[in-house]
Length: 230
Image 1 (cartoon, rainbow, N blue to C red):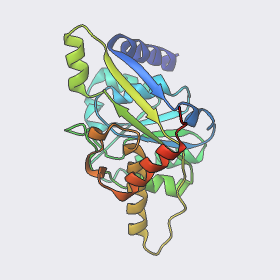
Image 2 (image 1 turned 45 degrees about the vertical axis):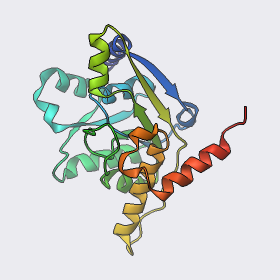
Image 3 (image 1 turned 90 degrees about the horizontal axis):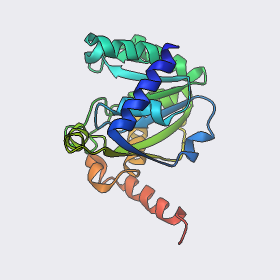
Image 4 (image 1 turned 30 degrees about the vertical axis):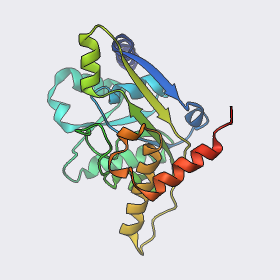
């Protein structure tokens, strides 16, 4: 009951403040097992968008620990089955929860950057998300969000308009298991691959530190070749 009420409120608020656009839903609709959904992080509405776009009851979202002091957010986190995570210290308990969630065939949603980008463009990601993906062998679903910046949402609201927020879902992929040799280098390569896949779903101004990465350019070329000719 609490889950349905919380999700209803979240969806109602989003419809009131934003015009929501979804691209590539077919890339996630076919997955019914465990998956790690990863996206860039622009604004406070990003977490709420998960419960609008993903129609699954087994979603686990990790919320920054700083919001734990706010009663209404604590209620939403509990009602929606989310969890608080310490972004700046080794939170082994939350890591175990996340890994078990994936191994049980459920879906975990993470922002590899670990925090909202101060500029809106991608910042360097941490390795936690790619480590989880490699250790569990689940599908990785890249998602690019744009238009959800706090400043854009507030500005639209002040002018009695709804912000235009878009979520673009890319094709799922998997990482091979990590080996003992060259472990750190491999994990770094996995992280860069994950972020380049996200960057390829975003307008150029949002690509940030990954703009000039050779792998991003390869993905963009692949997208052009696979796009239908009209």
